[in-house]
Length: 50
Length: 242
Image (cartoon, rainbow over all chains, first blue to last red; front, side, top):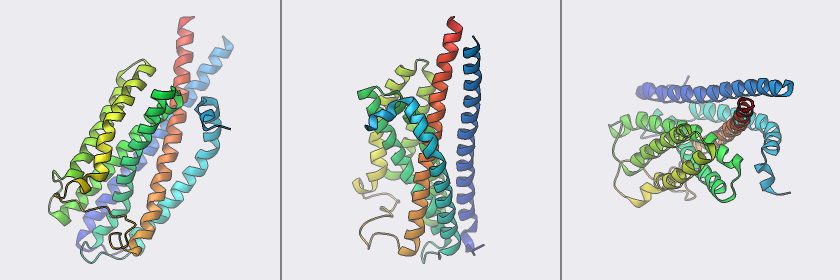
């Protein structure tokens, strides 16, 4: 860990906040994608079976 | 072969299925290398101390906040002129990504500004235009959600995107239009004297590449979801009607 001196709190907060936002965005995009893919597969199966 | 062939959802799904994993892995590698290099292996700035390390998040996210809107503008124009559904869905898919990039730029800017300027916020031209750009992102996303008919939603959000482009341009060029304000000029320049020092420049370039690739990966992933969601909606409507 580098010595961040008197600005350690600011630097770590900036990195922490950005990491939280990016991880949340990636997770939400992936989760919605997986949910819609599953629902579409079910709907297509139902459509094929009449 | 024409680029317009990829406006066909089936062709787009086929191509994006092959491209997405590569882009996602490259994005992860660039972000990891750039951020580790910048955070652990670069020195403090002689004036700004260790806060200079915030540059590896602030500058790429601010660039992507504006560039995402430019991408949405191009996609919206394609929708308005050629009526390709994939372009409208790509614009919709990009909006939350651009919004988060704008939020990261605003948050890291405030955190950086407090120790350097003595304030979290100032009604500086660049900061203010960025805040307005963020509000445009929120409005754009809300408009998509509020309108049931997808073509009408695409039309209206495209018009909103054209209007918001003024603020995207202002966010980029505000420091050139107005001399007053706290925010410095561009950190990246072809002019050696204006550009940041090489020791910060190279890891910053890697981080910018990482953010561009992350944006591309997320837009591809979300556009694929939007296409599937449109098909799901059509199937459900068909089932309901008979």
